[in-house]
Amino acid sequence: MDTALVTSTDSANASLKIATVAYLARFKGQTRTHADSDLRAFLAWCQRQNLDPLEARRPHIELYLRWMQEVAHYKPSTVSRRLSILTGFYRICVIDAVLPASPAEYVRRPRVPSESPTLGLNHLQFEAMLSAGRTSANVNDFALVSMLGLLGLRIFEATAANIEALEEVHGHRVLRVHGKGDKIALVPLPPAVGRAIDRAVEDRTGGAILRSRTGNRMDRHCATRRLRALAKGAGVATARMHPHMLRHTFVTTMLDAGVDLRDVQIAARHADPRTTMRYDRARKNLDRHPNYILAAFMASAT
Image (cartoon, rainbow, N blue to C red; front, side, top):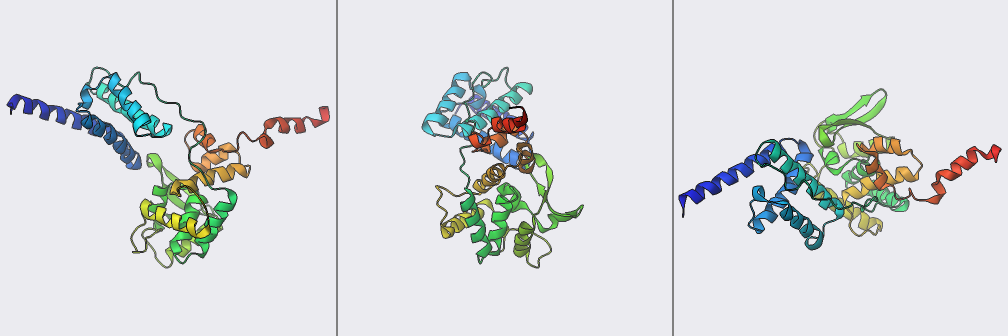
């Protein structure tokens, strides 16, 4: 083999590795994990195409976009997110002088529907899940359903929660949650959730709140299995029960109960109110149209 070719290949691999590490270093925790996964998906696609990612041009990015849409059949939100990661990666390559220009700069992202594609549970289904968790022989089940559905925790937040994070603040019992973007949030515990957590904790003074049957910390896969078993036992018919379905239910149930959108945004810890609005399955409901509120307010004049 030509020694010059080997040297050139090694140099290209080293440049790509440095560029990848430099981009991922901008993130922390779960955000870094997700960015790494999305970037690896593109690098794997490039490998199948015998394409050096650092030699990609705009048509290559367009082809990757079409592959995600028409071959892999990813949802628009997934395609948009992966393209966003790709755009950020190439932007850092330009900043670090690895590339003269970004091949993803003028690639248009697909339109993401204003409504979330995830289906939450309706009120009766949610009550059935809570009841199934409460009566389950597994002490972790009620805590799991409550932490996801009544606190709105993300699954990685719930499974990472430790007993040491339970505190008393200004007369409120709270759970200190390590959330997205390395942010810490104090989430108040309603009495029912506190009892569910106490039941899971038992007499332990430290370690994970949620545990698997083996006594180890529960992970997202174990949580998904437990939720599917509870749904089956409760007669909750869903296409595919998964943890985020309960967080989705947390948001939509509060909106259906008439909680102000801004308050729901704060409770869900959404940085952008438009994210919260995507969950609002009833925002087009005519019963809640502001015209009725205005007419009632001005009734004396009409």
